[in-house]
Amino acid sequence: MLFGCAQENAENVDSAAEETGNTNAVADEPVETDEAEEEPAETEEPVATGENDSNLIVIITPSHDNPFFKTEADAAQAKAEELGYETLVLTHDDDPNKQNEQYDTAISQNAAAIILDNAGADATVTAVQKAKDAGIPSFLIDREINETGIAVSQIVANNYQGSSLVAEKFVEEMGEEGKYVELTGKESDTNAGVRSQGFHEVIDQYPDMEMVATQSANWSQTEAFSKMESIIQANSDIKGVIAGNDTMAMGAYAALEAAGMEDVIVVGFDGSNDVRDSIKDGGIKATGLQPAFEIAQMAVDQADKYLKEGSTGLDEKQLVDCILITEENADQLDNFSMAE
Image (cartoon, rainbow, N blue to C red):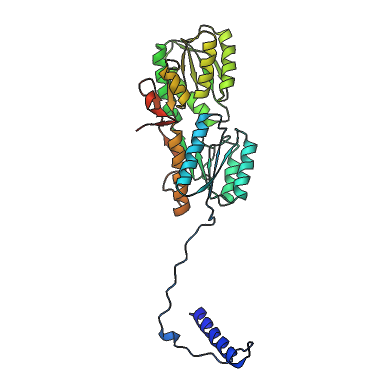
């Protein structure tokens, strides 16, 4: 009302000034109006907005050389653009320093949200906190961090459940006995430890199953190939290999093929198309599907809801069950997703 009176008063002053030719005229007396008797004009309600009105979602994953991480990035990007967001896709190559720089980039570009498959459970905490302090929420996929309350969501495959399924199939294929090798992932990745634990919770129940070697191949196919070559030289009588992911399984199987040991039982974990094709061809025996496509799109959906409503309505820590992939259902698998 005060603003309306002032505006009405000013308009009357301007009118008087034009009539007298004095454009610097000031009202000595308040001008009477009928405004008190009039209904106030309707105005539009202001649109409520958060601190950050950006339309940019930044998607950060490990290298796209691994099809699992490329699928994550592609799925997140497709969902974000479907919902009307702009996207920036970056890869940190499992380098925490590079990841930190990419978080700085996201902050400097005033991102609305960050979708992240992180470069280390401990090393990532500072970056996520930094974004939170800047008003930018993080939504983690695939890998957890060793902190709660700073990311909005941490959505990961149920690695323990999935690795238990794979281990049960491995034991069955091995006939519950024989020497075997385990290839593990990066020590800085909590998934590596969880999967190994899931494997052993099952395998260690069988006294005739003997692990003769365990080495980390850091999720790498080339490293798995070279590590497996060395292991074969010292253990030519192995019967099986259980790998913490599909790229390591592929590397191990290639080394076994090169050594003429195609009968050695190999299983992996992830659900890649490469391993799917090997299963269908009678090579690798099984894998555990992490639904990477679904998880990445879940993260974007939750980011969208959080940005619009201020909450996802869900717990921060969320587990998505894995699916055992064998020759029976391999045809249904494509790009880390099962056909309906």
